[in-house]
Image (cartoon, rainbow, N blue to C red; front, side, top):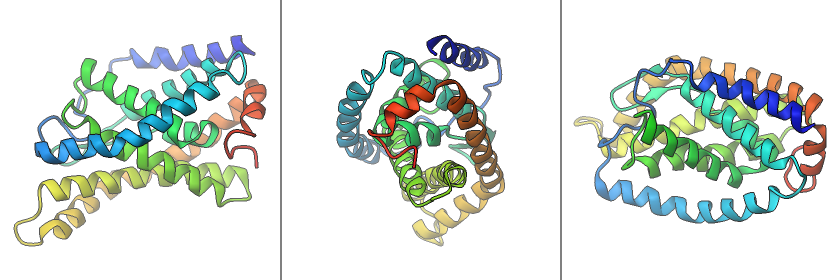
Length: 243
């Protein structure tokens, strides 16, 4: 079973080194005032604490669970690196948080998302260190929680996976638009006017991307259910997956 997970993981990792990164990811360095940057770091602290506790617990459920967690991280990294330039200071892209949020729980994805965002900020010049808290809050805190809760609302598992992944993606951009609107309010319409403008621009690329991510996550689950049933069965008692 571990060898099969390794094959999937290696396939995803190979994609990391394909040169396709061109634009700044998420909210770029310097686009938020220092006070707001600090506020988002503080908002992320309790979720980070819960994530550390949760990931330590789940990592030892089975002998291959650490590989499974790594797989969720690789999936998140790859999808969040496939992006289209949007408006100044950000970009549109899948998030990859739905898969891990459903299987491992939202707080584990806070840690995974934080690591992904930190790696991209340090080594790929995507996002930024001063905006790491804001980007973590949108993609690794709010997004996974929404994905997890949406999945719980569906009796049909595949529909739940699709909508959890798609809506987790969209809510991430709603939060990002809110963060940018607060930092850069419109001279005429204020925060609401700026938010409306940002969301209208995001929607052009983000809605199709969210739909595509939902479909891709369903396909990902089909593969994982075939090769990692032991890990999924073990997680049924820990998170909501497996209804």
